[in-house]
Image (cartoon, rainbow over all chains, first blue to last red; front, top):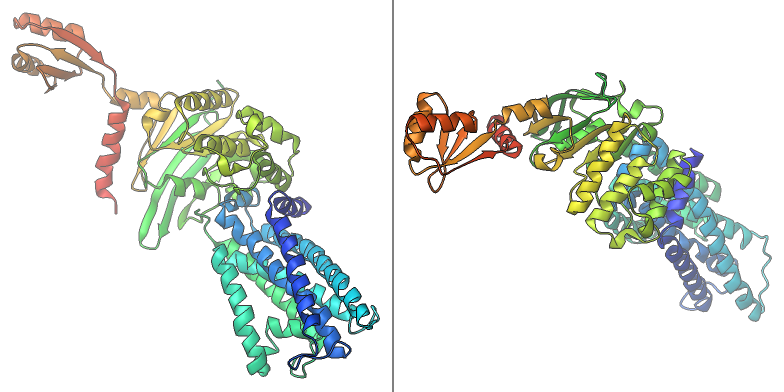
Length: 248
Length: 305
């Protein structure tokens, strides 16, 4: 099993996609944090000095999760795209360990990406806030806990991606479909139909990054729910992969 | 040669249906240990589907296929028992050739030192550090073969490995597989061209329309493809009649020639002399396996399904 996880990590290290993705996470998080701070206090957004304003700035780190989910999709669907699934399954004919190894490797990479996202967030937000005379405590509910929640969201979305990519196989369709679902459908449901939205991955993520919204689940329940989503998607990937004909 | 009578690969009544299409229909054959067996049939005969079922990639609708007595998925270390090269485009285009092999070796728990060895074995050392994006079809074939060799398997299963190789490459592949079999290795190699493998294989398994047409040694098959003699004579019609009296078949060719089957040049010469028929030219026609192959695979196509 460790061999398989090492091989999955090696797959990423031997193509350029890994470096592109790291760069992407840095950029998307930097933009999100900057936008959040720059627009704070305008057009109804909370002012920086408030709990809500701080959480929105530091919770912007979680936007790295979109790219990490794409990474997870590429981890699985990419094998079909390039027909490398055949040799992977020849080595691991029982297949379940293959998807498990992908999930494990993705958890490691997702955690690393989460650290990058949090570091970028701190590097931008702290000096900027300090310049405005705001000095939030790092180990606080509004900063430390929000960053920890963001890191969890990023990591778990990587696992969800592994599951999606295993089930859908068509890499482009999986990426487009997943992003559209999350950013359009779930986002709307969270806003318009919170009784349903709170139970979706997007709603659970919102709670984990400390969004101030009474309709969302409490953080503990949201964490359990998001872990359950990640586990369910991974299990779905295992189930489908084990039964599928690899025709290529 | 270490040819034994042990059947190392056994396919028993294997069937695969894709929707309404029977890609493979109750196919049975065996491969003897230490031999090179050609798995032959026209495109669409079900060769690739059969090889993929043998390797546990496709689940058969019914029947079973075993390697060394067990289904592939139940082998202890499958990658070190069977080396398979199934397709030519199974690499990430942005990954280097050596990295591709390193990934496979790592996953299979094989010493990565093997990577440089197999690259040298297939003659790809110089391209080792290049991304596979720019590889020619021939280089892809070699890289696929290198991957199959990583685990030092004693059995090789290759799907159309000569596709895209230049004549030199085909010659190299032939020598490579021969030496692999000479030290006791077993090879199952598919092709849609009998001529491509007729210099290489010991046995042939011929399929068409998903069904077995014949399994035989190449020697036995060659006997079926009777050699002929081409005769040129100004009296070809008379000669044909004279031969017919003796029960020998002759086909009229162009320009006053006859293709005579089942007779020697001596016999034809004597018959002609006895009938006072002049002969300008006689030449032996080597047996034509390809023609026999075509005959076998096209006639049996009619009764599919």
